[in-house]
Length: 442
Image 1: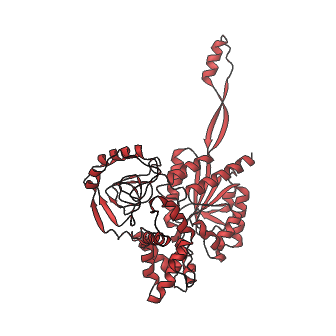
Image 2 (image 1 turned 30 degrees about the vertical axis):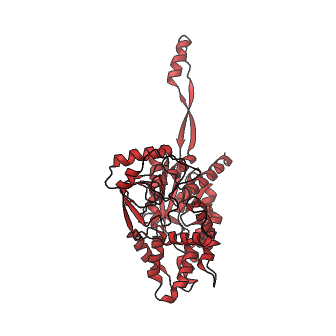
Image 3 (image 1 turned 180 degrees about the horizontal axis):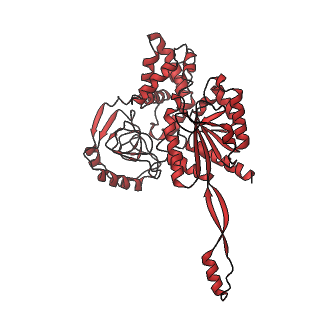
């Protein structure tokens, strides 16, 4: 994670190295980073050692994390307004932007939300009081959106629903869902994002119900990941909330094998009809069969956040339908061997892998980011041989797509092995391609 951060920040004459990444990972592990505003504040403490570095730091941060380039002498607002990130934010929040807002006011609102931290809660609202004023039969005026969407700082206040029972919350949520016809954000009534509604995600509702997505402050008493309640983000990196969507995509590569078996019942029934002439009746039995080889890069700290989700996904696949799954491990890249244990002590030569049936579906999991010298000729030869033997291969990469072109080893590997993002959408894309290869191979 953030493997290319030092290089990008160094380009702005800032000191950032592996130690910076380790400190950042510790902060994340301790729950100090929950919003991009938290990330800005925490990373600043590691990098900015004197006031004159604040300008370069801000430029580097916006460039790396938001794809906003601030040119020399350019005002921050101008850089924001011409960026694709701002345009996407504007489209996503069109329902809560006031019609008479100037472009600069919209840029300020965007910046407010970028820099908000989970420490910015300034006011606690009585959830019971909000509840009593509300009801479950409010009509969803889809064209007008949520009347509360103009809230400028959706996370600067919190509603406390601890006085309400879970049964009350669940019953009201069902009533609201019967009326809901559109997406909402920033309010206190609908199942949506941000705001202080007791149900939804990304907001500030103590003892509410989190539905889909990530929490605003880990304050929910119940978590529901059901896509029927809230759309699953298929473009998000594999996580607990979208793992079932990824599983649904993986099911698409199940192969069918047919075999002829004796139909005992039909043989008896038709034999009796023939007056005792029993002739064997044959029927086709179709079995679902899936063979998967999974290779996981578990050697570096940058992959740690994703390994558990990957293992959970394929473990779920194993329990949902019968198949042959073999998991192996490597560090950064594969040379002449992989390992059958996570500690990478039990080596398995690549020759043994290549002796397996070519019908296996092969998934490599890794960020493919390493020093160029690590990706040796031997490693590239190994990948080439594996793709020749196994026609159904995909490298699933958790690194954001926008960073792929800036990493040399990613560019090299994806020329050998088809590369997809480690998201439900990326897995679906890989499965579609594998199925095409299956048809082409007969």
